[in-house]
Amino acid sequence: MNSHKNYCIFLLLFFSWLFLEAQNNNDPLNLLNNEIELLKKDPCLKNASWSVMVSETATGKQLCGYNVDMVLEPASVMKIVTTGAALSLLGSSFVFETKLEYSGTIDPEGNLIGNLYITGGGDPTIGSKRFDGAVSTDSIFYEFYRALKQNNIRHIKGSVVADASFFEENPAAGSWLWEDIGNYYASGAYGLNINENSYRIYFDAGVDLGSPALLNIKDPELNEMEFINNVKTGKAGSGDNVIIYGSPYTNVRMLEGTVPVGKTNFDVDGSLTDPPAYFAKLFSEYIYNKGIIADSATKTNRKIKWEGKTDSVKRKILALHKSPELKEIVVPTNTKSVNLFAEAILKTIGRIKKDKGSETAGVEAVKNFWASKNIDLKGFEMEDGCGLSRKNKISTRQLCEMLKILTKEKAYTDFSQSLPLAGKTGGMAAMLKGTIAENNLRAKTGNMDKIKSYAGYVKNISGKNLCFALVFNNYTCSNSELKPKIEKLLLLIAQTK
Picture 1 (cartoon, rainbow, N blue to C red):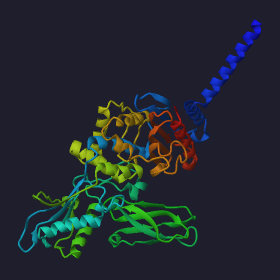
Picture 2 (picture 1 turned 120 degrees about the horizontal axis):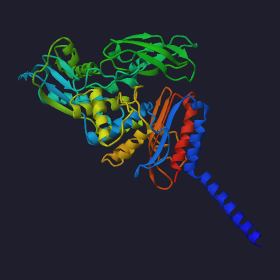
Picture 3 (picture 1 turned 135 degrees about the horizontal axis):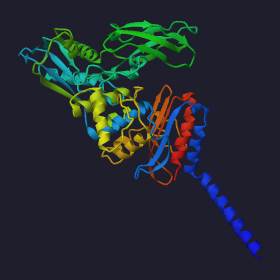
Picture 4 (picture 1 turned 90 degrees about the horizontal axis):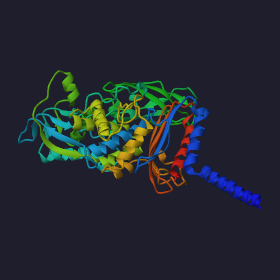
């Protein structure tokens, strides 16, 4: 009888154990950890360096992690470091200012005996199509023209001068790749920017693969540039594989790569050679067409300096244009990953906090901000504000700690809402649709050659707010092969309890 009773107890305990094991095996956190273990054996990641970390934003408790202190190249996830610090250091309502000024005097006949200055304040939004019409070049040019009319200026007995001295002369980070600098996404930040510092050219593909593609230039302002066109006709559906080589302030551009066969008016964007000079030229032509003539050719503060001259005359302000607020600018910065915006924000931090509108000063101020929040920056390297530099290094622990700290900052809502939303916006628009992560998980994405990264927030099924970071470097599979593996990790993170 006792043996039968003991046997029943044994069976009860055994099945209870089986039940608990089944429960544990189906526990989302265990499933997440199991998936990480599987990735350790994935041939795609055999030669890769990668890291994952998930933690609670309220407590900082780590839920799971792998290589959390390994510093890796984050690509555009670096924009979290920049925009998160900027919203705290500058404030959500910060605006960039661009001034219309003059030197000399205005006589009764409406002659300006002096120069007209467009004095930049680093605003990257002028001419951008990512905002409403208030930042269009026509709107701002009219705003400035109206100020000239109100002050009875009919004739400029000097030059229209573009003053971009708010930022350093060098627009690009020193470690950006040569193959990037001539392309639109590497349009560096100048003290005076226009049209996101980019231009557009067009190609008509040839009939046969490998045949030359014809270059069309539709903007007459680009005629002074010299384009050496080596672009060929590529496979149908191959997309934009054109690389534009060229450095700032020089007009020669070498075009390499392919455009898809059968395409006409195939558009490719490059980085302007000298945005401040381009700004001055466009505005000078605009007011000329309105009847206001400048006697001398347009100038920039850079060219004046290079000629060994100084321009320290006192100026008087005619008009002041203000950009959208910073909380609006960080939305496309993070959602659309606009490198120019991140760079302008970084240099502005440097200008305001270190009195130098330079990459170096901005980086120093941002690092000081995160250090003041007690983040251990050992191994952290910051070369730019946008993530284009291959010298940037950060760990998933550092990213998660930054994300956690930002939840306590005044501008947290503005920051979090700037991150791409799963199934809806930016780099997350096509991911996690139809899951509990859709319209819930927010993550800044990063993509470069052999770099894929995600970092952001999600509310799990228990209602806890989590922050996470995933960074993959030097994998041997394609991005399209790696993406579903990462998407599975993100879904499991959302499903944790």
